[in-house]
Length: 281
Image (tube, rainbow, N blue to C red; front, top):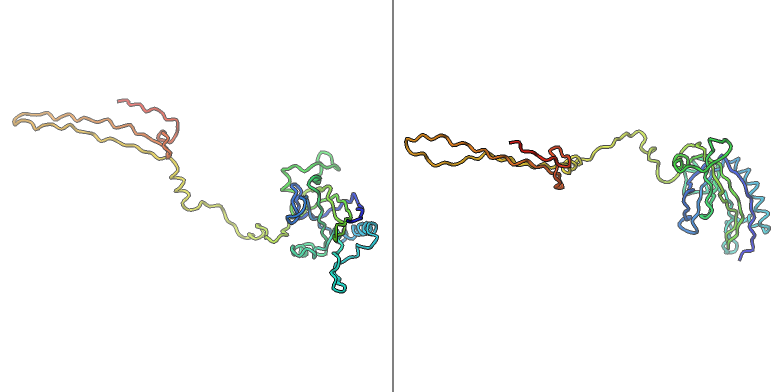
């Protein structure tokens, strides 16, 4: 059991820094393990890292009198595996081999992964337009607009030492983060950005073949039967007798009926309810 007593460097405000891979509105597990947390990766330029490094190293020296902060995990002595390296809260972008674009976009920079427990979510804020110099919670409708890879922000971070078994180091705890609309969106992940990949290609929505016919088939089906005139048969007239031609009896045509594809009665134009048809004969 560790006897380490955590020590803290509280109230550090980093900024303006670049926000990447932000998960600030729903806690998640890290690599599918451990307790769900909120997290964001912050990119520090070389000057910001140098200034922060002075304070964090002083914290480590005070918290680990046995010099654990010197462990680099890279030396094997007499066949014995070394203890794990001391974990600093920041690493160079080159230390993120799964994200090689980081070194291309931010050469010489450092990244910090700042986390917050699920039961203590960070405050995600924006400047208050009604009272400059104060800040308000980010409206939900602005999240997609303001929180993106490459967004500029200020972050309130606490640093704490820890020791758990062979793991020892300093972690970053996210208290708040302020976005203010600055920054340029960047594509960091393995998947290319759609708009970048499709640059120079212009396509428009089209209706697949057969869709028009299918739509027509689902429309109004009209059925109507028109009766034909009927004649009355007469017997042959006796010889010498003049017979007036028999009057042709016109059979009334059945009233045309209309219905939709599902069998619902309708008018000729497809409207419902059905208007009664009147025979004026």
